[in-house]
Amino acid sequence: HLRDNPPEIYHRGERVEDFTTHPEFRGHAGSLAALYDLQWQHPEFMLAKNESGDTIARSYSIPKTAEDIRLMSKCLLKNAEFTCGMMGRSPDYLNRAMASYAGGWKYLAEQDPRFGENAKTLHKRLSHNDLCMTHTLINPQANRAVSVAAQKDPYLGARVKEERADGLVIRGAR
Image (cartoon, rainbow, N blue to C red; front, side, top):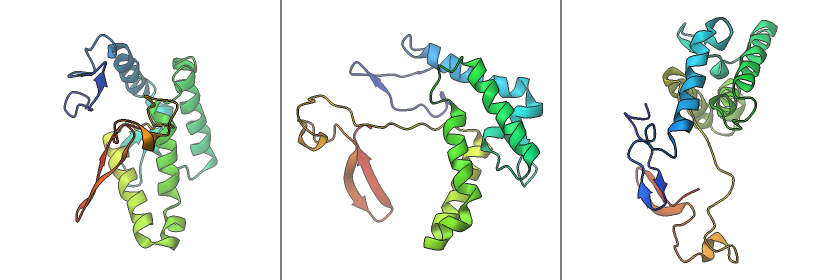
């Protein structure tokens, strides 16, 4: 997927064309690929069947029984052991969050039915494609003396650039 749908990554002002071969990132890509391979090396506890009977990463599964939880624990422990605990944002991290949202879709739908449907739809897309998500906690800071809103580049930190009928255009890094 990284070659078919390359992320837009810039390093030292230059666009990274292929994350998997770039000298600064190929080790990261290799570590991520090894985690994906690991689940197929231990399918008995690292893979699961979803409600449709499709095989998915166990980290995307929604536990229904005590045995499901035991297998989830074994799966997550294997990932942590494999990375020696040094990959703080391995794919299973947000996979679990998305599975939790999907498992709680009825609660989310109480506020607005679309919220519950969105949680289920996103979870299905992510788990079916075994996608890896990540997040950031802070905006980039070029000048630490001022807030992100006061930076020289108004789009240094992510912000809404445009509101359109089909959604928002977000520009900037996060």
